[in-house]
Image (cartoon, rainbow, N blue to C red; front, top):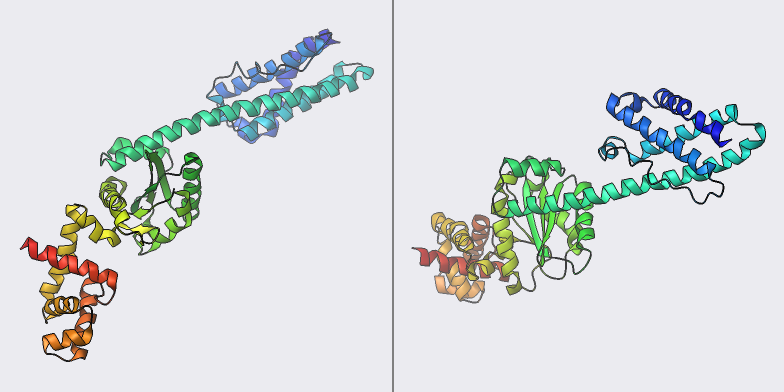
Amino acid sequence: MAKRLAGATAAMTTATVSEMEERHPWFRELDAEHRSWVGVVARAGIDGFVTWFADPDPQSPTTTDIFGAAPRALTRKITLSQTVELVRTTIDVVEAQIDEVAPRGDRPVLHAAIVGYSREVAFAAAEIYARAAELRGAWDARLEALVVDAVLRGETDETVLSRASTLGWRASGGVVVVVGPAPESEAGQAVDSVRRTAATAGLDMLGAVQGDRLVVVLGGAALTTPDFARQVVSRFVDCFGDGPVVIGPPVEHLMDAAASTREAFSGFRAAPAWPEAPRPVESSDLLPERALSGDGHARRALARDLYDPLVGAGGGLLDTLVTFLDQGLQVEAAARALFVHANTVRYRLRRIHEVTGYSPTDPRDGYALRLALTLGRLRH
């Protein structure tokens, strides 16, 4: 019986390839080289079954060599589900051929043997694809870490953009860098969880663990919308370890991400000075702590964005702010010191809020305004 099967293997292989072309349109679209490799694999599988069945005392069939002849690139050309379809087609053809060449009494045994053999082939295929996926995943993780490192160092050139594109980065506008403590364990799972959340929000994402920090780069036009970045980061903030999570300001392109990185890292270093800060917190909300920790950009931002507008606005706003702060945030006391009505002070406080975006009556904002006054005066 085994000799009869061995003599029919060539015909089985030819019939199998023809059936593949008939059943699967995607197989017909493969180039000649890849169709040829599929035929080689099919022939190896059929020969392997015949050899195993011919053994007087067959044990579990050995299927590890079936896919050995095919190049590794074949796993990138044909998916696992397509491979399963090809295995199923091969089994159908072999069973049909058996019914033609084998005596009726031998057919049940052969069909049962094919079922066991095909199961082992399927397991071997799954193992090969799983191994390939692990290799691709490890390579992608290393490549992603290199891209993130280049972005953080401000070395984003066309090569880095090309590598980011390979990793699925498509965003052409709106980039935000997020920095927080790395999780104590399963950092890879944390990055994958962040990636899923970002994808749900319609954002591109690059992420890597650098020492004790988890760095996430988000991309998407929606990030330029106020508060959108904070809303998205709030969804995956638990993926970080314990400690502050700081969001840098949005920039227009991945090549400009170094500016967002600088502020995010500055805020991350200064965040311990504000234990009550929300989580996540924007780097701009940490301007006072960043200025005191030695960040020159933060010092200039406070003077430029808070002190200078008050000087330019006139109307006694600067004097009112100084007096209000000196009087312990008391409207009536400030009015007496300025010799004006209390309602005038209230009006000017509202104007200060409109001009700077900071409310003098809020303790946190008042702290930033006080520091901005000091820095603005030192600059002149």
